[in-house]
Image 1 (tube, rainbow, N blue to C red):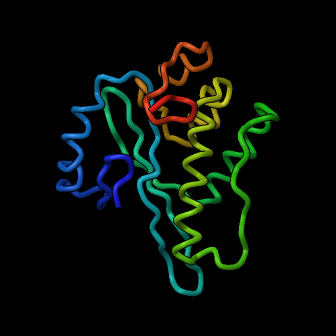
Image 2 (image 1 turned 45 degrees about the horizontal axis):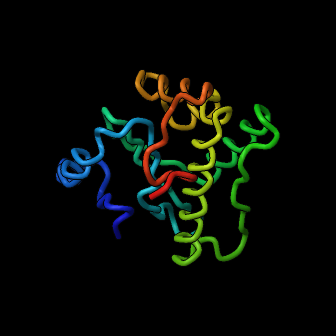
Length: 165
């Protein structure tokens, strides 16, 4: 399944990154940052499975991948609410049926909306909890983009919430 032109494949294989080259060339001239939840993967034993959401963090200069569980999003949500009470709302937790493919697909879509909403909110985007969630420390360009978000100087990448297609 493709996500807005980004091939979804095994994240850390060299062949997988080679598939991204044409997309990177087409998008590298755009300012801002984009976080794309490319896929959801189920891991663990049948008695305790969990879902990892694989995200691509893209700037005009780089693309890198990270994986997060729903519990990581929940920790982010809690930390963001300490920074800003009106932070975007995290999709609700589900106890039963949370491993069904249909639910996982819908949860991935909801989490994408959640991340896009955070990026569209200058206070949340520039917050330390969001930077830590993205693992942005050590990635100077990402830190600069998120810092500019606090002053409304960042121009969102086409496709983010509120940006015309």
